[in-house]
Image 1 (spheres, rainbow, N blue to C red):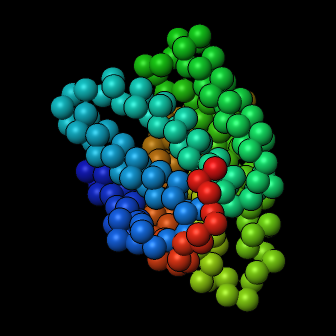
Image 2: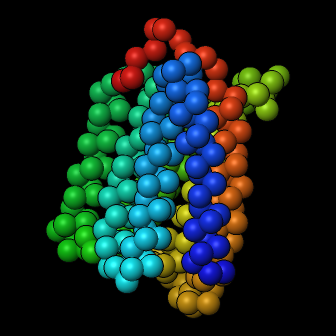
Length: 221
């Protein structure tokens, strides 16, 4: 698969961004982090493609490393607003502080700011996958009557699919299970992930369409 095709497929996150812009003033505020992250994701995809086309690929790992930290923060914020941490602000702050500290240590003290931070990517994707599965069991399973109208169903299912593949790829890059994987195998995985991302982005868009109107008592933290 060419970089151009991968880029075009990745732009599907733009559907969620457009829906967020249109519905922003009327949606439940607990979904704001989801839309903020969609906007950042779209900017990262576009900037990475531009850098790649202008022979500035060395800057891409830096952008992705920073994005991984931001992605964790926004998803943790989203889960906090949904009540995964039982609306305990101290737990939320502890989680993001712990991962921010870990990111700083791994990225700067290990001297890999300009290289793919595979160690952090494995840790944060595994954690977000755990959060997504736990949230699915807590918020979706008990309310199965109108499951396809539940935005959490689409968003969490998309997250579980995405981070399952993402964790597999990052583990393969690190040979974390003691199995040395070939470049051909990893390229094949990236191809599969590109198509799965298309499905995930469409699921996110459907979830965005299902988001209910805002609740006046919802806070942003």
